[in-house]
Length: 313
Ligand code: NAD
Image (cartoon, rainbow, N blue to C red; front, side):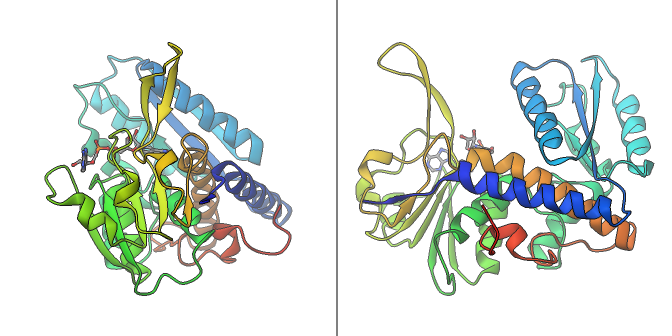
């Protein structure tokens, strides 16, 4: 039987560590970390995500500042708000919930956030830092993927990793992080030929395609570790909606370990956002802006990231 990697439990451990870090910062006289969340319009899914993020902040003691703007907000007005948040000493992380309304250029907005407060890790400077291995804030879902892999793999060197999906927010950063850990990485996508054959040689598969149950049992080598990022809402047999991942979960019991959907990667994303916010606050307090912050590599205690130190719940 494959081990089921419990994303909820690992996210909870990370939250506990994040909370302990916040408490320690405040006790040391440092500012309490603050996250500004900007929501333009009233996309229902975005509303849910923003609510969860605010709740997460409350749980770990991070100050949260919610900025709700009407859908007709101009790009200039949004840029003005971002400039204000960039300069606000109480704000250490800025998150602009996407998708933005069509009249606003998402790339311009994301690039306007100062890289040291870009806790989503989407700013071109942070993307560049990740791809050159020179630090930077890394995107939350890929960071969560790495933490889940770290919970079951001790040594990544030389492992064969196949990433399915090449988006900027999941596939590409995951591939870069796996490369950084000395894996041999194959990045695949919708036009990749012989995907089952490529997947079959993998020690690690990270599936981030958004294609329900794409990865079948016979695509998986015995003993492989499988991380399922995909989330698709489908109608279940009982007429109720259910969430399905990219991996045919019931067919992969010969794997070493697999993440469930839900309860795998999903819970890690917000926990990593909170973690990134605290690392950003620390770095800003220590160095100010332009410090080359590296929460992934240079966290003062790597167990903060990996959840394996003594004392973890
Ligand atoms: P995307 O649509 O931007 O990219 C999908 C990628 O998968 C593309 O590169 C595409 O070429 C590839 N792909 C699609 N169908 C494929 C197929 N049949 N075979 C091979 N490759 C295929 O998606 P995204 O934003 O990267 O998200 C991917 C999935 O991960 C979605 O289901 C999304 O909901 C989920 N997601 C989950 C979280 C989380 O927190 N758990 C976060 C982000 C995304």
